[in-house]
Every structure is written in structure tokens, then in C-alpha cells.
Length: 103
Image (cartoon, helix red, strand yellow):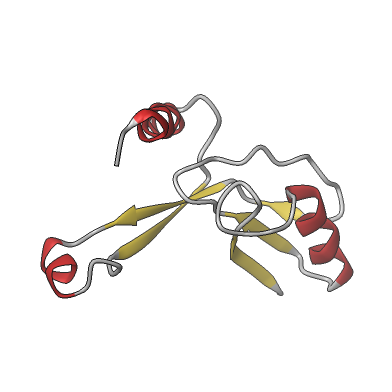
């Protein structure tokens, strides 16, 4: 089985739309994918030609690693995240907060 469960769209640090990612995945004959944008559950159109698993990538910074390298940390991949679930609601609030937070 050929799958890729760690893809990013233009909604995160990728460059392609979800539709383009799905089209390319089908072209290279992947059987399943997951678009795991950072702290954001991307809405993905249904497609009968490939299995799509809803996912999110969460940045988890470890204090000790941050002291040594501010760009380090851990990324945790969450799968089977549903829209309007508690975790999706949390990320929507988080994105709104970060948008208005001053740096």
C-alpha cells in the first residue's frame, strides 16, 4: 500500500491547494493521504479515487530543546480529527488568538 500521511497545503507551510494535492496523489497512485497542516484542520473535498484521512500537525516545544535551539521542538501528528470536534474548536480559537497577538 502506498500512502503519505504527512502533507501540507497552502493553508500551512505548503504551496499547493488541497485539490491539487489530491490530484497529484492520485496521479502517482497513492492509495491514501492525510493533509496535516499546522494547527489547522484543512477542509478537504471528498474523492472516490483515494482514501483521505483528516489530520492536523501540532507543534510541541520542549523547554530544554528551546533553550538550546529556539527553532527546535516536536511535531505531533493527529489523525481522524473531525470538524467541530473539541480539538478542531481549540485550533480555531488558537489561530484567532495568534492572529491578533502582537509580537
